[in-house]
Image (tube, rainbow, N blue to C red; front, side, top):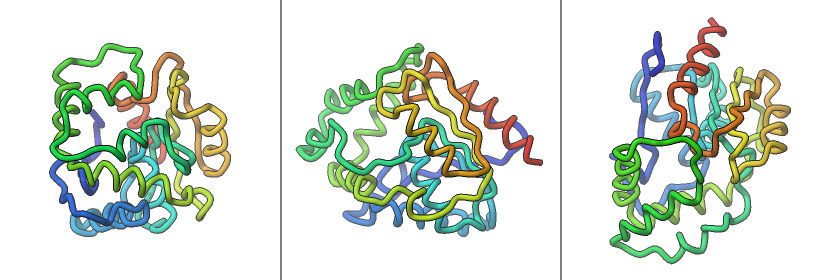
Length: 217
């Protein structure tokens, strides 16, 4: 829990309680959705926390709407998603209704090294089942087809980059490059954590995020 801050946690297009249209899943469109949420909330500027691909959207938001982003915290966030991950063919074959066993098995793409409550895992499975097949495909293709935000523009917002040393998806070299491309950034490594940092150690992520944002005044 972030103490001392008002927190908004919107669902990205295609996920959770958000609309699930047939299109509009490009990285640029998802960043525009995030900007529209801030406008709808009458929040002119905000510190933005993004985990995994959500951090990719946060980077794009910081590039296209720098005035809206006072700071960023990127949690297990990629430098680039260009190309096709190994599970892309599985996603391409999805049809509705989704199979619960497939959604549960998809969590194995991101090995975890700390115990995560069973109820939390089940909630994430339910989240996956609520996403129609076209949303799974649209989100993956939209992210993979986009130019990496740090190649498309400059990010000037102070940024905390958190990375798990046992992340099998994102290499350390990419995190170091990401930090080098964001001048006002600091990289912190969690030694025994995988890609799903928010799942494995939410208290530590919250504490580091709170301390970082508080240090900015």
